[in-house]
Length: 133
Image 1 (cartoon, helix red, strand yellow):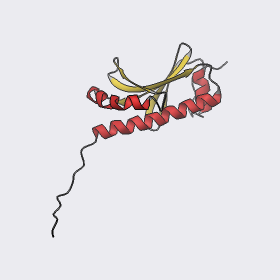
Image 2 (cartoon, rainbow, N blue to C red):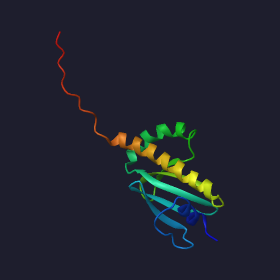
Image 3 (tube, rainbow, N blue to C red):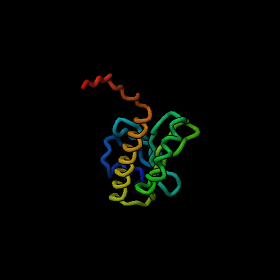
Image 4 (cartoon, helix red, strand yellow):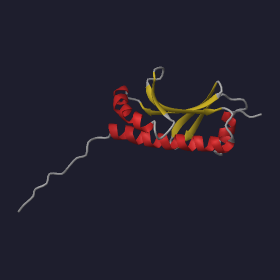
């Protein structure tokens, strides 16, 4: 019987094979790494959102509002010194639930990556404007 990690990759039609019985796998999705791991009775997905610890406090401002919209959680990974987004689902989840879980996680990643990108973007340069009567 396949575990949740194997079933997830099968449900999303991931092109690379997952080793049988794997409890950890790194997926290449949308130009970034998504880590999938089995932790007890749960399948956990995570992705690095930002590498600057100083940005965490600014990103955290959005967290309270986002927690009402999504199940993904913003966190600081002490071991890797990066800001990550993670989300979990029961290991017993069926194929359709795994697909929705993955899609919602990726939507959350897109939103958070955009916010982190805004923090690190240079300020816009306004051209000098002369207004004549």
